[in-house]
Length: 216
Image 1 (tube, rainbow, N blue to C red):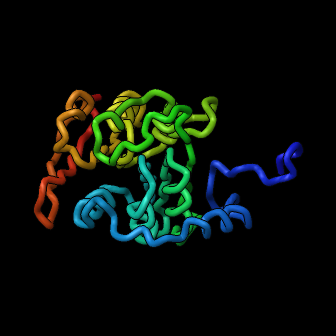
Image 2 (image 1 turned 90 degrees about the vertical axis):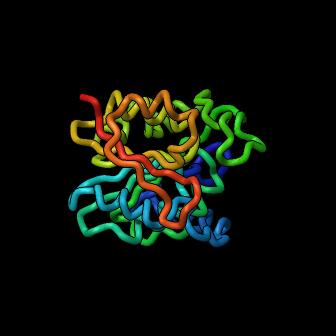
């Protein structure tokens, strides 16, 4: 509770301990259907197939894919999803089926550089104001979720910077996936990895999912 305002503090972490009455109420305010994930299901399945039976998947960019992953986790698998946009954070939270295995982190931008920019716009690569999102921690003094991830799925904003953090900080053996890897402005960051596979969309089109391993 915020003592000065008399209202509950905004929850920036949602998991089995924090999905209380306020969180459920806020999620219900954003209960419009998410629809299908932007990333084709065949590509999402490739991400999930790379996750060990007791592994942790870190997802940058919450949305319909978050719900898709959460619905398909094995009993000992876990999902951590990081989001910078409040609306998408709550839309996904409203449909997460299992908080025992899922954690969502709200890491808002401290600047407004993404206002009115469409998804896929190269300017959404700007990392200014997104240090907590890119570092995958709600408190700058906390350890990054990158450190414990067995698989990292890079979607959302500032993908190049997120890839760079993964290249520097992910544990040995971590597998990294990049959604929309056909966009040439991610090239500098994807070059930090060794390409394992390029996975086209099963439905055709230009969407490309690339699978990488660390160079170290």
